[in-house]
Amino acid sequence: MKNYLIVCDTTSAMDFEMADALGVELLPLSVIINEREFKDLIDIDKETLYRELENGVVPTTSQPSIGYVTQRMEQWKQKDYEAILIFTCSSSLSGANHTYHMVKEDLGMSNVYIIDTRSVAAPILDCVRTAKQMASEDKSVDEILQVIDLKCKNSFSYLYPESLTQLKRGGRISPIAANVASLLRIKILLYLKEDGSVVDKFAVARTETKLVSEAVDKLRSLNVTALTHKAYILHANNIKGAQKVEKIAKAYFDDIECEIIELPTVLTCHGGLGCVAVQTTLKTN
Image (cartoon, rainbow, N blue to C red; front, side, top):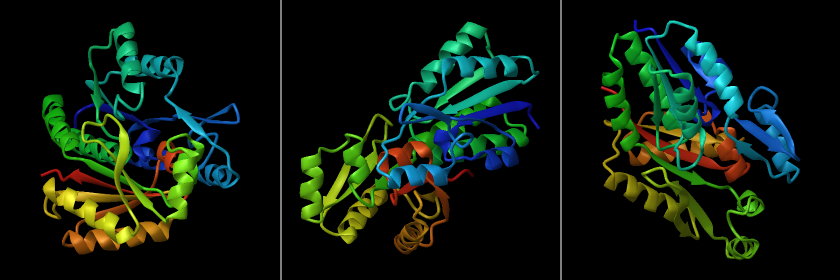
């Protein structure tokens, strides 16, 4: 087994129990509530975050500070790793990737590889699992990076907010637009652009059935099948909604493999309570 260190942060939808079981390093994001800063999943858990959202609080998140990253990377430098692979969410959505590059250069760590997954949440988790498995099979860094690059190019993400309340509070949709949409019972499906550049509106419809139809058509056009892809269903305190989406995915995509997990804090803060996401990732041969 290769002596590689695999690293990600809590944008990966991974918790510390999962990280410990996999043997990877997990760094917490910062969650800011009423000007107080908490370390994600350390100082604040999912249940507390859900309560704050129910009370109308608008939390925000920020990447791990450069000081904290430097401290952790200095610790890793002291250990005899053949390579350190750091997986970040899309560099267009967060400055974390840039921070790691800065610290790598400052510390002169030539064995560090920083991978921009061009995504967020489950695709990062999937990449980390793959890298860990390939390291256990004595694969080289180049072999791992080739597989990861292919995965990153074939991951697709959709987010369905149960309501527009949190999008309105967070300024991602205007109050007028939110009120009109609510009045007309309009539903919105968001997606992460394939290059990871921005979360944008994918479809608007009066019914969930129409949104499902448009998403299915798009995924089929991207050659997503049960043979080639796995589906992750993520939710913010809405397991019933996630199970409903799982049934839909299996019905439309020939019993595609699905895994249900909780949304990471960063997406819950944007999508709000009850939101459900679907993310498809390329299977590893």
